[in-house]
Image 1 (cartoon, rainbow, N blue to C red):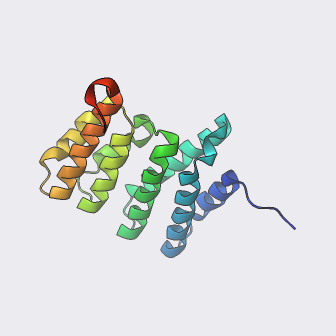
Image 2: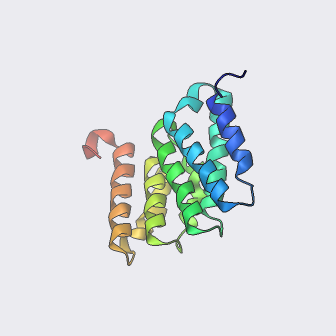
Length: 160
């Protein structure tokens, strides 16, 4: 009889399944990854944080891939759930800044992730979307800029 899996074991198992040929199976794995990341349990020690970074890098790769819409959305959703417990660095999610050609709903996820980094380096990438043709993308870009500025200067900007 085996005990419950640790969050790291769940992540490792799901990460291996992300290379499965069945898109539905990969999408289910992304849901598991999202659920585990949302708990924040991987942030307890350096090795676990390294695991989280590797998972985030893999999620970014899936989000930018030529996979189907649903799989890319699941990867971006998982990234969004990881922003609160892990304080993702811009360095890890910077490739998302090149996502100009993504569908508007997916761009909204991208902007949320970039805004949550709190890194000045994300401002130019986010700012480009303030003039996007889609109003939802423009709104999310404005929110991301506001979030970035608040994180950079919390005392002067008020609430995010």
